[in-house]
Length: 622
Image 1 (cartoon, rainbow, N blue to C red):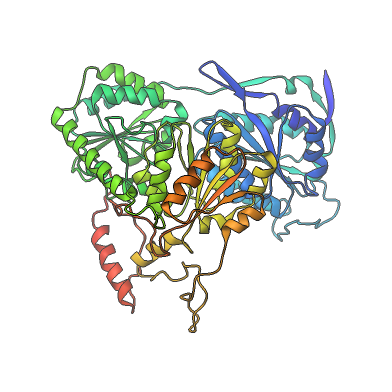
Image 2 (spheres, rainbow, N blue to C red):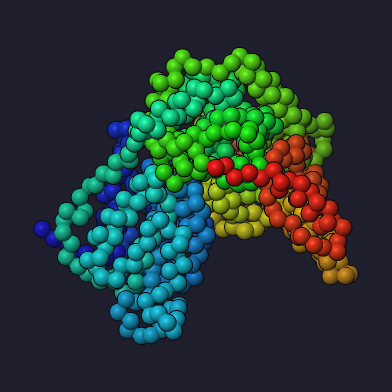
């Protein structure tokens, strides 16, 4: 039996019948489609979405933002459900590239369906066609190849069948998942074909939980059992595996302290006796001290980025050994580790059974417990408010929010100084409260991602935290929040510039050049008065309800009001000074940002001296 449909109609019907299943629980693989229509997709995918039932649609305002919204949804869904994004050809398609890179780097599934130029080439060139003298089959969509985990161009109707199946396989694969691109020439989208009925039957993609190899497991058990100062580093793989309970049990059994990456923060909730906080350049003093002295480091679901390893300077024990439990063999072999290639939950459960009743010494437990308490005192100091009638610092904004939330709240951030402050200071109440995208650290991620999270968790308070620089990058999906009646809670911290990069610029001898939002001075520099920018008014013009607290006292009232809102609400906060980024402790570990090797300016010379001092501590683990 066959069914006659266009390629676009067939694709939409196929997507509506795809499911994932893990641990006996089934959900839609592609739960909805985001789209902006142009001549490259309106008559194809656009018409199909009208005709075919079963595919919810969300209207976006910016193509990159639509990908961010889809990524937010996928992360909140633990990668078991995803969204598709359709765009026209040309700039609509190339606007997907940044979002695709973010999705792939963070191992989060999103299906991209950009229109493409004519496969039949009725005219050459057509509108928005890229012409290259050396290749006739290249379009701007080829920009998506290096940031996609799977890419195909559907040049004939029948080619959709293997391409669509391959796309679903990659999206549902916990090792390979990321951005998947099916480029759709606009003429092929509208072309009819007789499709086998079986193509549209419900199809279940089972998300595997591979168990560890016995030899690898034995080696890992021997290394951990022989350690005197072991440390666990929890990454995002703990969350995506649903391994939080297994980690809790394993840490409680062994007494091994648990530090976290940005993606892994919250794997143990604040207050767990083995939780020592964030690790690395943006980490806590407690976690970083343990890392410097650890003899065995157990990485669980982490990619070992430079922020986590302090650019290779953090793990200082002369004979430190790494054990990497990771579902991806590529990541499990990093840091010259003993690899344990397995699902995080499966691996932890088997380690648990084989190590019982192993436990670290009470002296070690007492040491890190004392370090935890000392760090919490420093957090309390950063959050402290000596004057309720003063303008808040950034850290005090977090401190006030800390007093209002519970385990149901979700915080979203990606860029600026906030990721560092949150990693060091925030006290997560639940395993999925902390949502900081730091694989790509993409300015403009927060607002659209919050919409995706709200679609995945509609009954929970969702907060998007942004600075003024990040807000200006991508505020357009506020309009979508208003249209969809999604109660987005947006906190804008106005510090009149790229405050985080301003601090970094000063540290590397670039003297904050070009980082403040100021008028030009008489000499052409950017040291004049702050620009008269009112981002609260901008948010209001897009349809948000805007609250404008001026003091800490006002802030408490505004955040409490926003938490119970049923409409998109913005809390617009002028922080203490343009030069005050936050009040938390400084970085507890180094981060490698190369400094000019020669300069005529004293600030750069001094910064280079500091750089040369730190770089000598870099170590390759072999």
